[in-house]
Image (tube, rainbow, N blue to C red; front, top):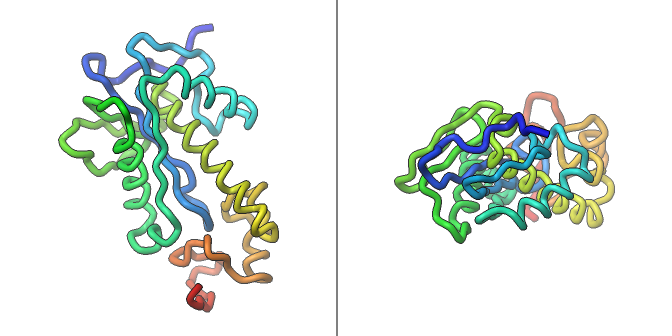
Amino acid sequence: MKNVLKPHFYTDKTEAGCDEAGRGCLAGSVYAAAVILPPDYDNPLLNDSKQLSPSRRQQLRKQIETDALAWAVGVVTPREIDEMNILRASFLAMHRALDQLRVRPQAVIVDGNRFVPYHDLPYTTIVKGDGKYQSIAAASILAKTYRDDYMDELDARYPQYGWKQNKGYPTRSHREAIRQYGISPFHRRSYNLLGDGQLSLNFDDD
């Protein structure tokens, strides 16, 4: 089966694909991954993580971690998100992932339309890049699965919010739980948590 995703954007450079998970969530850290695939790599199963079942994502995560020349995951906490805003936090998570790569990339390709330059490396932003390039798809899978595992762990501590199901996203039941129980230490206080257009919760120090 031929892969509809392109192998590489930069054909003459070692490139790292980057993507994030969790930008739109009310709770939890934002995760990002960076992946460098071999020059001749072609995996027909790779795709945007949102198009894959949870079991297929986990299967591909193991394969990516085995096959990649280098991979890493970066994390930015809810408190950091509140301090700098989610867009900057997403870029920081990508930078933290890139910092950890054991192979230094010569270029970066990023899902989306904005990015903060990483050192002096050339970069290209690609809208819906996780459905166009294999390294970005691989990064989306790693970011998504590692973040989902993290939210499942938090759910065991705060089961009232249903994070195992909603992963921190603003579902109706999640917001109803916030109304009933208040916030956890992992909620993003700079967000409109109740969906009423304002920051209406009374935040006490943790």
